[in-house]
Image (cartoon, rainbow, N blue to C red; front, side, top):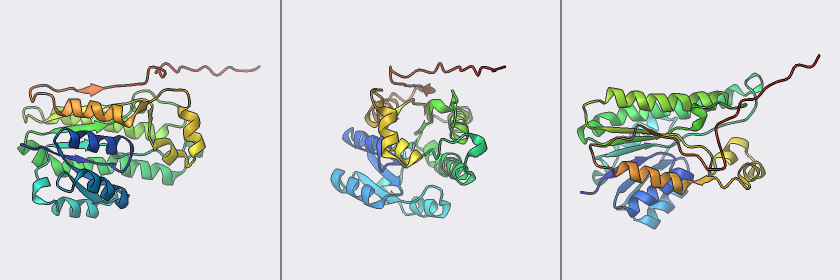
Length: 250
């Protein structure tokens, strides 16, 4: 039986790599994101019978509901939800940050994720499916300028673990994957600068979208009696020990 995955944020990075990896392993995928032309190109390349392109902004609840209501029959039975869509905006300290940027991150990383998850839960329970959410190490270890992004990812990490508790006994598997540095379009979107993105990743040997997609595939294809609660992958060249001391000058 061919299983079906619903992958958010599939226009680039981890999401696109996940669609490619799952399709290569025999899955069907509903690929969602804002950039319609990228999704349609992906569906054309991998096959319309394998990929259903659904372009919408996850913050637009009505558009989300319309997509869910119009899923073609072969794609209607969803066995796996990959909550990947998310973004960061700005690196300013909280006292200088843009409230618009904060609201965008909350709407995307928190509100859209919980709404979509809630709408798909009845199907996932009926099919004893799985939920894999892409959180972040930023939800576990904060850093300067992380403020609302870090808070939103702490929410994502813990909401996913709370789902695991609520879905006890249903057969639904739930996993929070909380990566460190992954080279995707993430920093370009955050800063608006390709140079800033290049500077961040240069020489760091970061993880790739494919690295995370391989983990998603591994988790998704484990036997139904096994659950991975959380995974925290990081590049070898990055670590979480960042305690700083501010010196007083008298």
